[in-house]
Image (cartoon, rainbow, N blue to C red; front, side, top):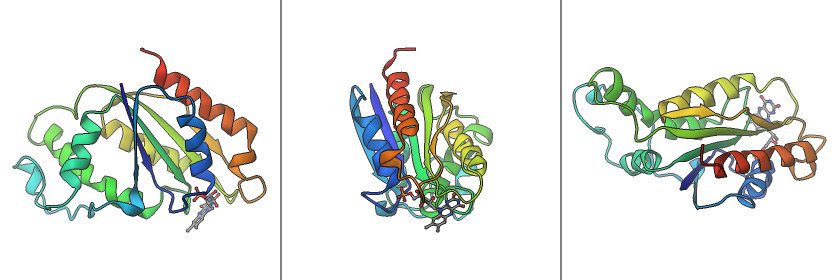
Length: 184
Ligand SMILES: Cc1cc2nc3c(=O)[nH]c(=O)nc-3n(C[C@H](O)[C@H](O)[C@H](O)COP(=O)(O)O)c2cc1C
């Protein structure tokens, strides 16, 4: 069983990192974490090459990223909330899922690998709602063929209570690991 963590935070010791650490502490099987801020995946240009061709016109790390997603059984999107949604660099990296959208809806070649379990882990300072980020993460997970998505786990007031001290969110992170560890 392989879990892929897609981390949208630029802060290695930040709030998202604290929540991800709590998930990883209980996670079984192979785990790989990809940081959007370190990825060599450029954003989709909507050139529409993929509407009629397999793969992508952009030659970079995008193909390898989609291959990793396809071969994973569990996907975790972990990120801070930025302006009510996911950080730009995570959205930029995952915009390359558009080639999978084309594979499915224009070329009729099916979904991305086997059905997976998905989960969403968010940190937010406390300025507004995380609903936009949850909605976007859900769309992305479905594009990755997450057939099931666990209820989002969020630490929503990190300006006053760092995620590393947010007991409810840390407990929620543990439940994501339990959900991922279970066979069905
Ligand atoms: C550019 C930017 C935009 C942000 N937008 C929001 C927001 O819309 N709502 C919110 O509650 N917090 C917002 N925050 C605060 C972060 O979500 C919060 O500090 C979070 O805990 C950081 O997580 P990290 O340490 O994992 O990066 C924003 C922070 C930055 C830097």
